[in-house]
Image (cartoon, rainbow, N blue to C red; front, side, top):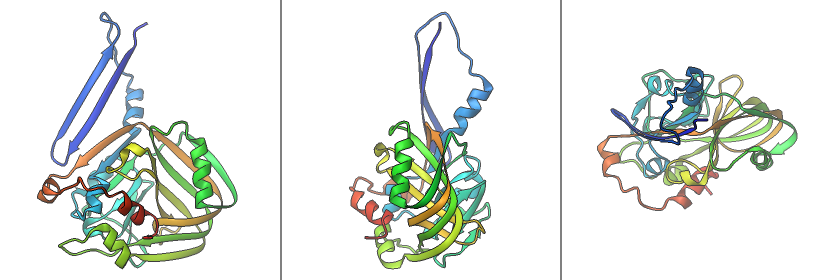
Length: 280
């Protein structure tokens, strides 16, 4: 029986696509044609990302990809906007901008992003959550149900929350400050009580360090689509955790002079922890 393992790596620049792929075939006299349905599944199980988290930490906030383009690659995800103007959540194919006033605004297709990650969400498993569980307890519950720590997962949590702590940041002006300084000086934190809504985000492996956020990274929007932000902490009363196993990755890198000339070699691990964990 013929077996073939195909390995593909995608590097997508804003204006050009370079695909490097290789196939290992253990038979020389047979050919392989992928089923169209299988191809669609593979295409959907891809995390598409604009720029890198280290570039964002370095203050590269110029929008590179439009929402029109971003939505071609996924219906679920998160990120930010040109000039770091608030937190992005992509849910059910719609994009919302949670600004520093704590309000969520629908976003038109011409708005651009310097950093975002999206995928087409198709739940592979779900976990029922009951009882007052805090964010650390939910993280442990999810972690116990992940089949491997070496692939990527898109996660959506729909439920009723006793408490939700979120933040956002205002738009910045050039010359842009480092992200860690924006969080320390200008982040706006909001405490929402007895709210229903959805958490959207990812669990990513350790090896994405510098490219994205290892571990959990979540944004929240309420069921009225009126409030939300970057998740700092929460307590859930009941709900459902849906997990989408995502084995593919596609990275879109800016071609701007700012990105091309930036020194991204500096270790930003401590800064990332500060940015993700309430600025502490």
